[in-house]
Amino acid sequence: MALMNQADIKKIIPHREPFLLVDEVLEMTEETIVARKHVRSDEYYFAGHFPGEPIMPGVLIVEALAQAGAICVLSRAAFRGRTAYFGRINNVRFRRKVLPGETLDLHLTITNIRGTVGSGSGKAFVNGKLACSAELTFVIGDENS
Image 1 (tube, rainbow, N blue to C red):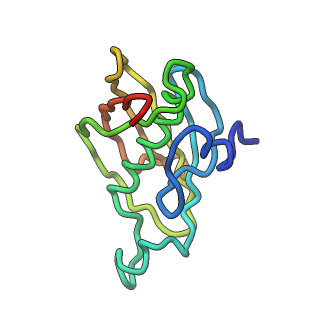
Image 2: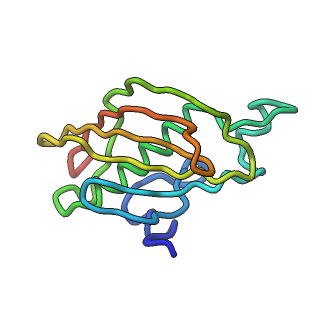
């Protein structure tokens, strides 16, 4: 059973369809999150990526990891109501294609936060097999941004 559904997630991060890439949160602590994206066959990007061989774009897998991390960080009392932005993406590795109908399990650990800048290490899996890994740096925007 999910800890959070999309309605709960929308209370934490500002992303909306078609760019909300996390469907549910399964587990979460202050430093870790396990979330899920159900990759539907009617996703808008499959029409052009690629005709005849639809695969989820790698940049969107990384974005899904970032959104999971944002849910984790912005759930903290100090950051509620704010927005997390990319600062840097390092050491991204893609290990397998993500296809329509598959489920992407997003695991992210917050490794450091100093003030409003932090970093995390993420991995995305399909059926327990690593699809993507990345190190993400983020910046928390001002309360009024």
